[in-house]
Length: 81
Image (cartoon, rainbow, N blue to C red; front, side, top):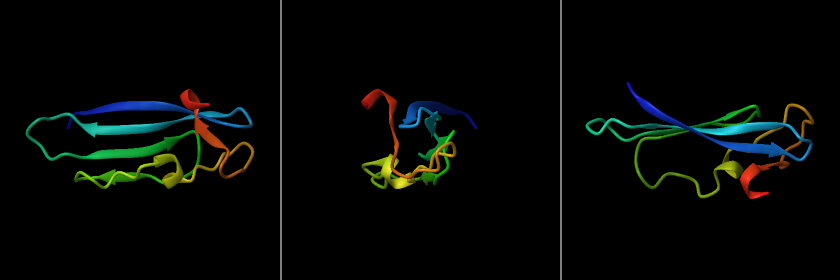
C-alpha cells in the first residue's frame, strides 16, 4: 500500500512544536481514504473513507493538548500565527 504523507507544523503558545500529519491514498484504482493524526501533541485522530466527512477545522476537532504545558486550546497552525 502506497500513501502520501504531508505534515503541517503546529506550535503551542509555550513554544513546543509538533505536526498535524495527513496520510492519503495515492493509488488510482483503490478506494479513497485520508488519515489525520497529531505528532508532538496529545489528541484525537481521524480516518476518512468517503468525501464530505472532513471537519472544517481539524485542529478544533482533535482538541490538541500540549504535553509540555498541559494546556488545551493553546496549539495553533505555525504558518497561520
